Amino acid sequence: MGKERSGMNRREFLKQSATLSIGALMGPSLAGMSWAASKDRVTILHGIGVDSLNPYAHSASPTYGIWQHIMEPLIDVDYSKPEYIGHLAESWEFQGKKWVFHLKKGIRFHSGEPFTSKDVIFSINRMKNDKRSLQGPNFKDVVETQALDDHTVAIITEKPNAVFLDRLHNRFMMSKTAADKYGDQVDQHAIGTGPYRFVSWQRDGNLVMTRNDDYWGPKPDIKEVVYRKVGEEAARVAGLIAGQGDVINNVPIEEIPRLERHPKVRIEKVEGLRMYFLAMNVTFKPFDNKLVRQAVNYSIDPQAVVKNIYEGNGFVMNGPMSSNVIGYDPKIKRYPFDPKKARELLAKAGYPNGVEVKLYFAPDRYPKAREVCQVIANQLAKGGIKADLISQEFVVFWGNSGVNGGKLPFYYVGRPAIDADTVYDQYFRSGVTKRVAYKNPEFDRLIDEEQKAGDQKKRLALLQEAGRILMEDVPFAPLYTLAEVYGVARNINWKARPDEKILVAEMKIRA
Image 1: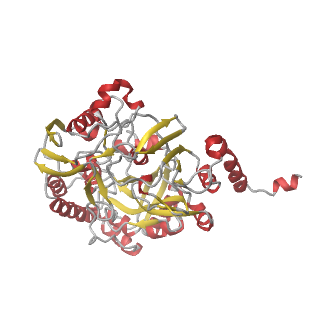
Image 2: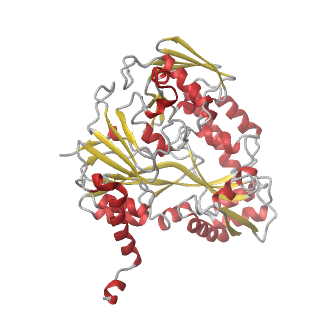
Image 3: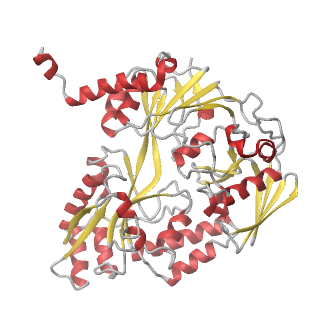
């Protein structure tokens, strides 16, 4: 008897335990579901859930994806180009300190009320002023909103803001009429214009939605959606295999081969938006020397990290932006892996015997960060850079005594972006943050001009020019983006998005 028990290894035990526990977590109503998605219901097992019915009390991409079933934004992104496209807005005009949005007509809320300018104004004001809102900073420079007519809205900012479309992305519109009717209880009704209507929600439980048969856009294929928060990766995998869920996010890399072999499920993956890089604070020696920063870049081989740490589930960055970001420049090429060149640059910079540095990282925030930094340290050593690894909890790493206080000379970090402006402004524009303390008047001029440019082609050209300056000065070393990996029932036709959103309205069920 004892031998039989000892024959089960730890991994098998965890998988069996997860399979047993998922049924208890999800309750008898879901545990008895058939194990392929149907047009009647799709169940998403997600690492996070909706923590509040306040649609503005969060600021995380996966949560945006949940809310977008019910409520919708004025602006979306076409990642295949990439470029901004209209959703509830038909078109827009940039007029210096004023943005004018022309709304689509014929759109109605779930309550039957028409979607108009007054709903846009109400939603922006609530996002800006609600004490529980985490989305207010997006509108900090908005000084006035005007309803020019029922389907035309003007938004006035303190100064010209050409990147306001990025601020509007993921900002969902709710009904002013519903707010007037229900007051403080309006969130309990969750009324939007989306393809699904709110049915019920339990904290740390299920969010249930049903198809909006009066939806203004294409009618969804699937009638009911259940989002279930399942924090443990093993439990999500077990739930998918057991048929208790139809889509799961953040599949562990080591589980990909098993799910790819499974007859009932498949792997779906796409390049994500989070870009990983090594940041160098130029106020610290030796990173105040451009030649040293260039030597760091010549010493790094991110392809080896992607291959050996992430088993190929990543995409090496050629420049400061990944290819799915607005502002990407396909003409920019990364520094080649050339340790000999790195040593030559160090000698030229006055370090003939190399340099010693500390490389900081947060293993509780970024996947496999410890393993990554160990490989990077070995690579740096070949280029004459000895890196001692310093592990910190993310709360310390990210706080005022760390990254945001400008106290870390050299660190491994990830930053998602849809538009290059958000990274360039936050990390590299003079005086915005202390993260790298980089200063370049020409770079600042380009960002100032870009943020005022009404012509998107001109703005893109300015971002690309700024990117070329960064690749010369390199106050960072670009590494890679990682794949967003999902497990999906085989009878679901669905293409994953890079923004971590799982939108059931984009799914079709195969017979």
